[in-house]
Length: 352
Image (tube, rainbow, N blue to C red; front, side, top):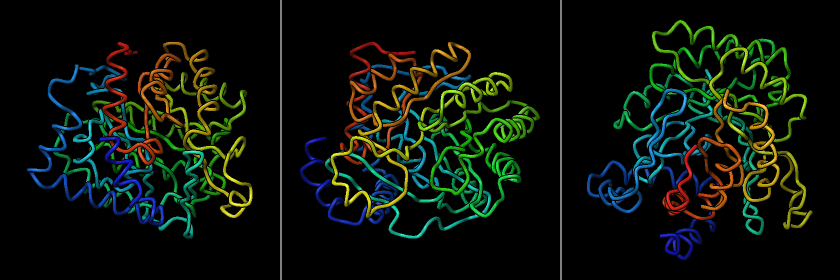
């Protein structure tokens, strides 16, 4: 499957504008997943019944396996019935904001093939919480875990951001299994300022307050930036422990540009945005390792950032991750990356 993707689909997709290629991929997967014959075919290829059981418990939820689709790929919950067929154990939809928004001006998605990387400045483009809730209500596989990655609208002042997170939580809580509170995207002006202690505490407290009113509260995760300073990470962990947040997603994209093979002229022409893929592997591993020392067994950890292979996934699990999320690796390696990772983890008996 990986060879077929590399030789046929990847050249075709890479001949297109990255955002166009992404939209075609989402539309194609959605169509294929709606046809019974193809559903059976996909499932037999990517998640055969004789696969070793890799289910596990995290934050009170039973996951089919520890490989998830990171937020950003399925922003609008179009693929909630397709991703299970590709072997994923869970997926995060979004980032979802209260009101629909178009995001930043195009072009806003860029490939760096030599580096196996992506730079994006999408800007939380999505259909808004009401429309996305309607799609989530049509989930066919209740055993497939779905996380809701939530954020604030671009024009919401930071001092009122907590209201946007509250609104998204209230609208989506009936339809998702856990929430990830996204304060770490570099593509919404001022968003990362919300990771500062006072703002972070207010947002997490607000969402957790509403959460505790439910008969069965949802696990809450905080998604952090790989560019955070050590003191800020320490404060975030303290707040998460204090408010009984379930865990941390480590981590979002980076604004760093160190060590890239792509020529500087092209990097300058692309401009700002979040870097993902192979170049942030080391940075992401360092953040995860430091987090594990801080949280011990008090918080669950999901690892993201530059996971491009089975060995990469195992390394994150060995560093203390309970689960992993992929996105850019899928673009460069294709859907065969999911069974490859699962097979590698099964052979190495890696479960946290």
